[in-house]
Image (cartoon, rainbow, N blue to C red; front, top):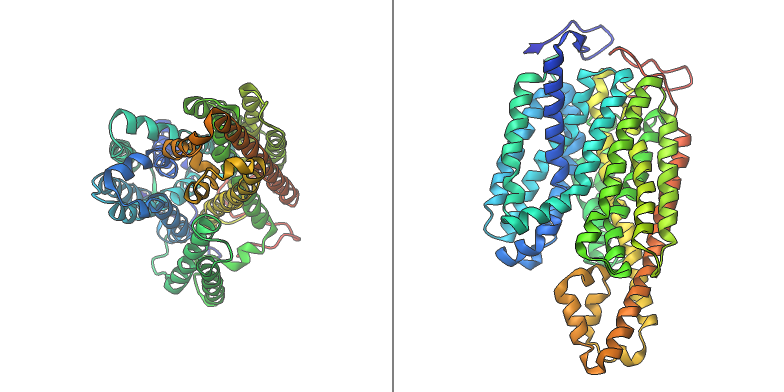
Length: 548
């Protein structure tokens, strides 16, 4: 059902009608469809990682190994702000249903890929579908609920996002071991079709009354041209190439040039992709910055705690995977509880401060762990981080949405998802570089020269990346290279690896704590406004400039 309403003279868009007239059954179905769509997009950011060894063994093409993940991340992040603007112009339902169809079709093609290059290209297409869904789902919530009621729903959807981010690797491993790596893509088909059917029939088709629009094509092209090289530089820097290499430096310079051109275009565009005045509004800028800090800390925890458990504590891969479960449950439960409390009180700033404060405290406790730390101590620290992340996850999108009119809610929601992705990429790049550089220095300090002399340079270069030690082939090669020195040399080497990893991971977690603390500071500047109980435009106070 498509509905429109007369547009107030001061607004470019209509405001959606009061959806309280919708049946409760239809409302629940619409929410379920949105959650399925979000689950699809969020899972495919992380589900591929554990299946990659099987994929490479089947398709070969090791040189394209990283692109199966990188292509998805690049395309999904780049498309989010553009879709946010287009959904403001043409309505939400068309992007929800179209994005789901595109995602399902690209998932089928990924499952049928015959080589790694083909898979990398198809993962890029899948990333476009995922980006459309990520942007559209959080925007669509605003159609069904005004801000005062949106807190509890944001809590539920943030819980789904957090859950998907953590169970993705576990589900990917299960499907690969039980069936085939192709099922990590093909499983999207029934879930996606169910989401499509529910959204098609249950989600209201509200569209703006205005028909003619000036699409900002030049802005879209220059935005993508600025984002993609920047993300590539952050992904490759310190891994594929040194940070000072011509490849990384060139990408950063090109990105800065394109973003400068983008800003110049947006200043003159009649309907800009990102209204620059929006980024000058403290009520919007503060939650965006906080999202960057929150995401950087979250990804640092999820990525590097399993490495600590396996290589320092000495637990199995299965135990390192299940160690994420308490954190996952903490994120889900605290996110739901926080959403309910925000809706009841109409206040949200406290949740951001408490959440990032707890996350910083948990990461600080993680930074104090060493070779003697027990498995249960790790679980306790992760539980604290999880509770903190759950409390702050519903806050920032809600705060940003509450600061704009309905005509701009797609743009601002797209920006929140965009900054969330940028934060995660920055966090992985920064913390990963700290880990690699710290380990490379420490392992050479801890290993006696007599042991170092036994290792061929190629093997030493491999273990300079500590995460490579989780690869059985690298670990076996490391041990084989020490066989000449006997059991004593092997014992010395393994102790050195544990000490070096513990030392470098302490630095990583401490940096994560500082990042989360920076998020607390940025949240202090958040201007909390009363959550609106209707769809009327936000009315900023005299000292608070209007967005746009």
